[in-house]
Length: 319
Image (cartoon, rainbow, N blue to C red; front, side, top):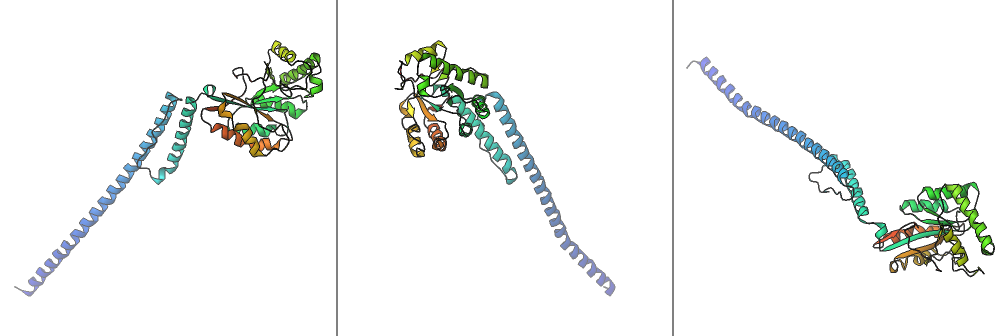
């Protein structure tokens, strides 16, 4: 074979070998590219799946909320949660918790509670009234305020604020001066008319409840207290005493711990507990103790805190 032909054959063989070596590389590149494309498509499909799951979850929540507010509960178990959806699922869990709380609240009827508790505050309004109202709002509970007569601008505002925030506003006499109020029936009526007119004018509502200074069993009045209770009845007014004393009437600055114990220790032995508190400038520890007292009561089984209404069981020291 001529030399030139031999060299050409060798070159062809070399090119073939080179081509054969390149083919696997090209095939590998194609395979890798195909894998990348498939991985990217899978990633897109996975994201789309999460989008659909999110939309389904939202639609489920909206549908259940419309169907029945008192018994809705959405399944809280979800699979395949990724970091990109962390915020969505946190918000969803919060909403589910809210729905569950509403469901439980609907199941518990405060009016049917085995133990009903009425927080009552005498002698206001004072510098602490607004703070007491804020605390009650914080725990979403309503109370009853038996107030005395004050005609300054701030007191007039507070009378209306009590009513506007959904609490019961009751009368505790105008002057709170025992000697004057219980002097005779005419004196009592005069004082009653003043506080009745003041509250009606300040709030635009008719006061329906009364608490005698010192209670209906006070020993100050020299006249039979039935004279006064009969008068209130003739005016369509219901009077309330108390059967639980917080202890803040004893002195000023009663320790918080004593107020808590005095207010809560016997609640579950009664169907109805009307607790006596005082709303005056000297009762700062009453305000300090109030949040713990409320939390303690709300934690009790089958127990509700309510404002005094026409449905409230009467608590009266004299009949």
